[in-house]
Length: 112
Ligand code: 5GP
Picture 1: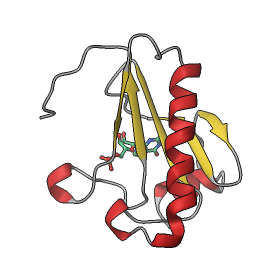
Picture 2 (picture 1 turned 180 degrees about the vertical axis):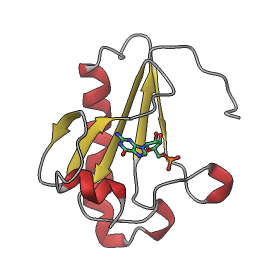
Picture 3 (picture 1 turned 60 degrees about the horizontal axis):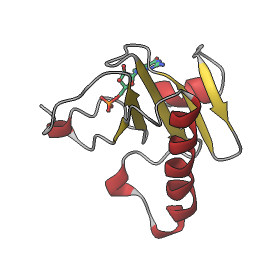
Picture 4 (picture 1 turned 135 degrees about the vertical axis):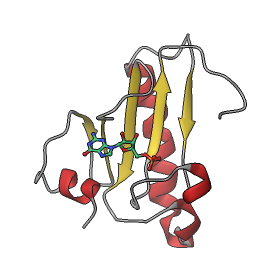
């Protein structure tokens, strides 16, 4: 069970901003931007490279909800970034797929 499964099960607290049957979204405990929210599937897909064809519904849902959550957070005009880290070189630290929504400051490209 990952830390994110424990958040889904309400075994550890999180600042939840959105929930439905497929996904949960909550504030990152160590924000790297003024707005930093994680969107996770309730089904544990470890990382995007391990997603299966029948995960397409939840994957699309995560993106649609990320856009809505970013807009609700007031980021539509200023902009925001969506990030998925996959594996060690990308800095993935929790083996439960998560989409970072980051905004509220200007960001460099390419990422470090
Ligand atoms: P990754 O580096 O795997 O792409 O991102 C994992 C993210 O999860 C990090 O930004 C980290 O701060 C966040 N995180 C790790 N543990 C917890 C936790 O217990 N609660 C919350 N809200 N965020 C967490």
